[in-house]
Image (cartoon, rainbow, N blue to C red; front, side, top):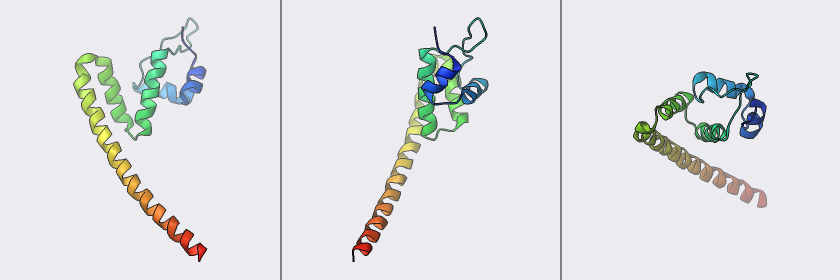
Length: 120
């Protein structure tokens, strides 16, 4: 037994509209439905959504996420390609972190400058 789309929305933080959209574009499989035709999200569905949220929050484009989901549906024979996708994405995330770290250093410098100027 699973949970409704409203409960999945509350649990995941994604709107019901986004959940339906993700299903429509193939990011998530067609979710099981109960006798009344209502979506019935399971724990594995929620775990997958949590992973998708992580990918999205790190800037992975929806098209790449769809490709990853497609590979996932194809099974274990795609492990190597999925790993390569994640490794490439990890490198992009690391580059973003490095850039943000540099940006933060500049901000800290300017804040320290203004703090010193105000103290004089």
